[in-house]
Amino acid sequence: MDQPLKSQGPEVTRPTSTGPVITSKGSGRYSSSGASSGGAGGYNPNVIGAKDTVGDIYYKTYTEEERGDALHQAPWSLKQKDTFVEFGASREWFLNSFPPGEVNRQRAKPHEMLYRTYILGEANARAANHQIVREWRTMVREL
Image (cartoon, rainbow, N blue to C red; front, side):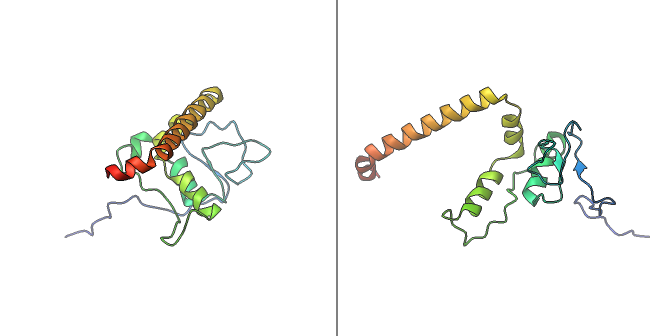
């Protein structure tokens, strides 16, 4: 007899406990207050807390072996009517625009290297913006 086909997607089951979930990458050296922002015990990026959003879970459960070749689909709750004059929409765009591989690469950097990367990136972006503003009139005519 023919048996029903199973769906291609992962099977999702309801968790049996309501406590924090630690992903396979977790080191277990931090405690969690249930929120992704950490608490008195510190911040562990691998602990999924009760207040985590879909975006938080998307990034915390990423592994290169499981999803490394999948397309990045930002887990936004942004609506088409949202604008970047709203802080919440701007923050969500920044939090979820980068693929998890890049987030993990940056997370692995020591603080000094992360700071150097930030300073170099900001200086280059501002210098390019300055040059664009200086050349705007000639750039517009060239188009």
